[in-house]
Image (cartoon, rainbow, N blue to C red):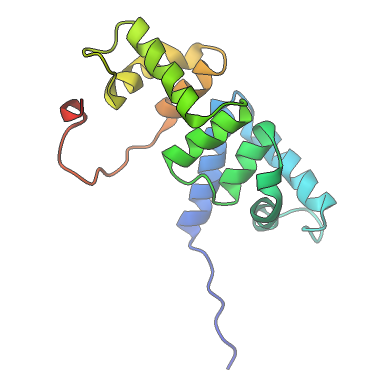
Length: 168
């Protein structure tokens, strides 16, 4: 009998497409347009038999996505499974903007503090998220990009029971 191929779960495939869409939207791009661009690159690189499937585009993204810059590069990283959590997404968005993740996070913290969202001398993640939701998502990049990413974030299961207010 032939060995069974291990297929990635549908959930992880959908997560990669969803992550790529979140990154596209954070960068102010249309996820469908970036998928078309990625498909054209995949087809040009010989990854597609006819019309590109999502799996063929993902195969291209896993192999070549890291060498593509800009919005398409950030989108490809997510499609290739290299931006599956918020930290990796922030890194991809920052790279597309020509910044480090730390510099992008500092911009967001500074903007939240300046807008009066931070109680202490340092902003908590919850305070930055509050600023992003209320003020940041309509701003141009780079602040708008990090704000849109933060406000698009699905609810994550927290490893500890401590509330975000406990973090100082």
